[in-house]
Image (cartoon, rainbow, N blue to C red; front, side, top):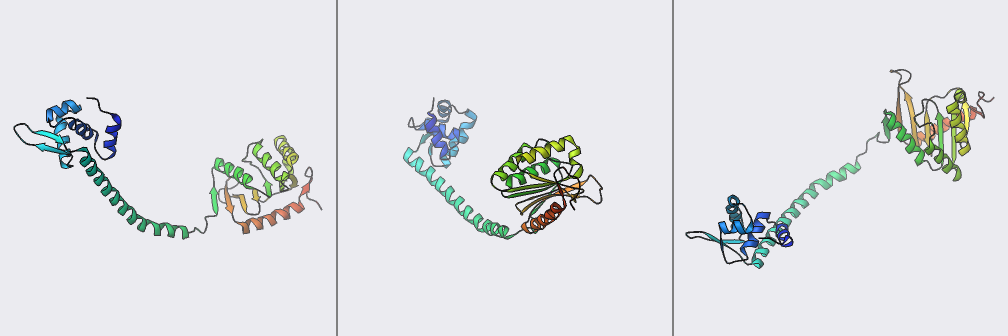
Length: 273
């Protein structure tokens, strides 16, 4: 017997298992069936059909008629569907009560969580080179008015740093400021010299200093990315900090300005007098 998929799926959506839906649809076609007839007509395994019929009887969707050979008949569809809907409504009501109870428990916890702040949640510690490079690119993208940099090797950005060039052009076109201080010997390296030239052409102002205290990026006097040399591990081992703190960024901006005033413009021939 071939059953219409839409009808079968509809009964299943009301809570019947597939075999239960197939058996009920078979039973409504005739006044009564034996279990063997139902199994054959509904294409349900004979060893399963008794369990399926018993389940439908418990749901009050099928009536069992005892005799020398037991037979089964479906209750009218209108009554069967009403009973299925009653079960579904009771289930929804139960879930609604559970949901309301959980809301009463979880909402205060959520509200308390919004009030909690980590005193150091404005500091991110980075050690993986890839993560440092990604954060450097991110702070460049976030800059809207000013970007200040102590350019000190080793560099995390790719040599061409096309994204950085685009940022400099964007800020320059918008009337912003991009200033960078390099080490005096930077121009002795052809790759670094080309980097300085390309960034200058994009609008970056560059100066040169005999030494720089650390690698530093300050964006809009609010975002800071800096390398902190590890005094225990020695040279070459650093921890990078990303800090979103206007007060600290403002202080570092003043420090940058101090180094900038004493740095040499042009090709880096030492501090100005």
